Length: 73
Image (tube, rainbow, N blue to C red; front, side, top):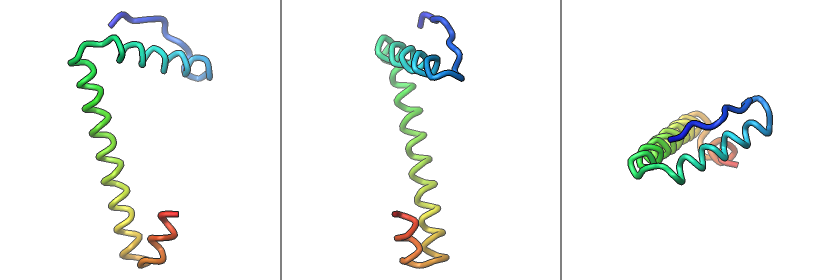
């Protein structure tokens, strides 16, 4: 990938430009590059879901159904 100008990520403009650059890199990347990014996204979502299930199970075991429903709202 061609490296573009680095923007200050502490500004709204810089974060927007970084997102734009990431989208450009993904859209114009090789199939292997896109597959790597997609695999990382899948793993991240799986980790988030597992953590949510664990927290839900702990909440259910401590507070019962009422606590779980309260946590889910």
